[in-house]
Length: 101
Image (tube, helix red, strand yellow):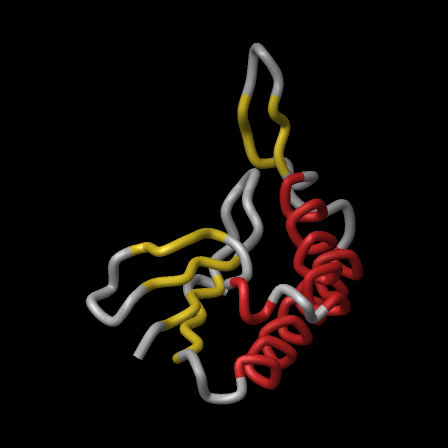
């Protein structure tokens, strides 16, 4: 069975699609799931917020973290909402793997 791994990575949507042998097929939602606008927008929002946790310029790339504990909690809630939405949308077509949340 193909799998979708939810894994946060700087500069990428947190979705990694793998074939039955574990080889990466694509990053981002697979073609049969891209029509789920709400999920796609939530993933983009999570990616943008995750990227904002880092300083990335010509001199430095470093983690700066969340401004407040409340910001961190809200982010984690979005991540879990996206994972649940992904499971629902995938509807058993893909194994859903969560890595490092």
